Amino acid sequence: MNFQVKITEYAKKNLEIAYEFYETQKEGLGNYFIEIILSEIKMLEFYGCLHQKIFGFHRMISKKFPFGIYYDCDKKEKIIYIVGILDLRKNPNSLQKYLQKRK
Image 1: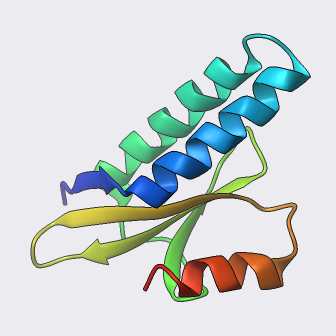
Image 2: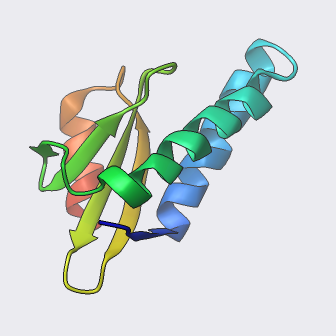
């Protein structure tokens, strides 16, 4: 099933924050992070809605970075809404609180 993927403003902000973090670690690493995450998000066009739900949203875990891509599916409209791109090293309670605000 082909889905249209939409990245919310909240998720875009998450990407900006992560980019800045990785760029301070090593020049160019922020760009690499963005490339990897966007390519993984692109895969949701084909494999969306198959991931386990965590905190009320589907979650795809990045293969290269410790980040979870949280999303909601509208199967009827064939749209995936990315609501968060979050560092999985954070306290799970803070991740849950963040995501509860996105419902």
